[in-house]
Image 1 (spheres, rainbow, N blue to C red):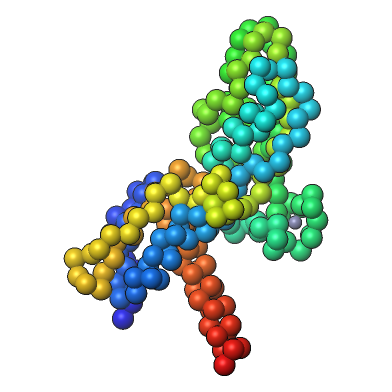
Image 2: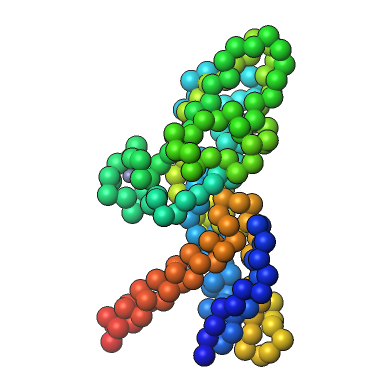
Length: 211
Ligand SMILES: [Zn+2]
């Protein structure tokens, strides 16, 4: 008899008891929670104007590392999208625009200055600094976000913490998952379970095809 029981849950952390699940599967689930559930991250930046002291690559890197709220029910990974377009479509990418405008004072442009074309996909935290502008400096850009996985690049990691410990009984393991809010911890665990089931199903089909 296998079971998954939530024993603790908060906004950023979940603790789940896995019962009767072989260690190698529990461990695979831990790894998928960390880097195998798709999340949104900025993947391409078109710089229109940048007169700040931070180089274009520096700005792009900061944008890439911004955690973005991710709704997995409405979007698909580009590789799985029907559009088969390199530019993407409204199901597989989201445009976020940044335009500082002009100012004669010193200011810091933060994540809340990004305007997303899709209200559901936006920075989890509005107060992350992106670039400082001196009087007269400007920045204007288009940032394209898409779903990806942490196994490809750390910017798409689905959890900040995913650890497995031994439970009180021999057939029990405790999985602890923490996120920054791009996905809730329970969304991560739920999607990781489906992903593991999918991978095991594909593996069984491969074995069956060999036989
Ligand atoms: Zn598409």
